[in-house]
Every structure is written in C-alpha cells, then in structure tokens.
Image 1: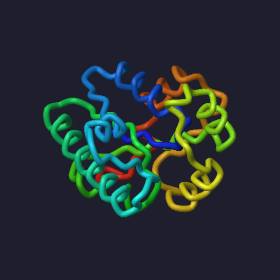
Image 2 (image 1 turned 180 degrees about the vertical axis):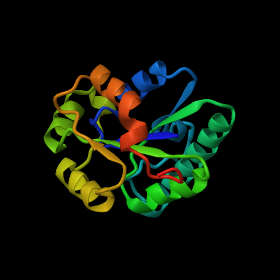
Image 3 (image 1 turned 60 degrees about the horizontal axis):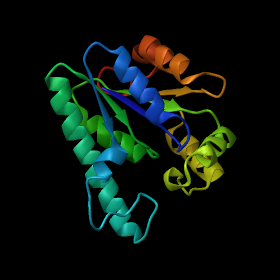
Image 4 (image 1 turned 30 degrees about the vertical axis):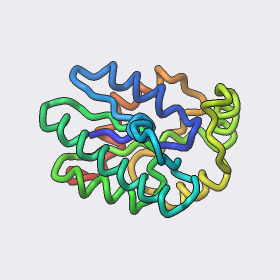
Length: 177
C-alpha cells in the first residue's frame, strides 16, 4: 500500500498516475474521484457545514481503505492519492489496512510552490485554502511520519521514479515499519 499525500498543488495526482504506471500491477485510488461519486449533498473537506464535511471525509477514508485492501489482496499495489492532514487520519488508514504494510509519502515542495501550482490550474480546479496554514498544520501533525519528499526541484517523472525506487526504505508507517 502506498499513500501519497501533500497539500493541493503538491503534485499528488500527477505523481500517483506516474507511480502506478511504473509498477507491474497497480491500482490508483484518488480520494477526489471517490468524493465525486456523491452526486447530491457533497461537501468538500473544508466546506460547510463542517460536521457534514468531516463525515464525508471519514466516508471517503473508509472507502479508500476498503478498495485498497481489496486490490492488495488481489495482488495489485494500491496507490492512494489523497490529502491526509492529521496523524489521526493516518492512524485510521494504518489500522484499517493492517496487517498489510503501509508506505506514506508526503510530497512537500513547500507552501509557495503549492500556492503557485494551485493558482496556475484551471479556475474550476483550484482549491481555496490557506497554503501556509495547511503546510504548518501538516508538519505539526505529521512531522516524523513516513517520508517527507521535497519535490520543488524535481519533475513529476523524477519524483515518481524516486518514490518507486525508495519508498519501501524511506516511507514505512504500517505493520512492516
């Protein structure tokens, strides 16, 4: 199991697509795609009402874990693309995916790079968030967990190659850690 996280604009979607394409048997699971399955009543993770947003994040996390476990049990490497901003959410994934090993990679090009990339997106795909606050919160919550990979100077292809080559050594957080 590979969880690739980071702030909006960190490169999760691009990198997870590339990582999955480099593995012999893989399945890319994107939290945004799962949330997009809610056709009415969807509330984005930082939306209002906050209690409903939190409930939908928990639902997405549970669905990602169920799909990842099913793919792993069928001998595919699940590559999860999702913002996992807290130690509590990471612990949820590790517990739900046990006893399977979990690798956790945080793409961390820095808040300014994420802000610039987010602003360069099509306006319909931009994520409204405070990039400095989220970066500080993730570092405070998740510091020391998994592999924090500074990708500011790397291309997506270089990042994907590095993740495939080094994640097993640098990113364990689950039972095999």
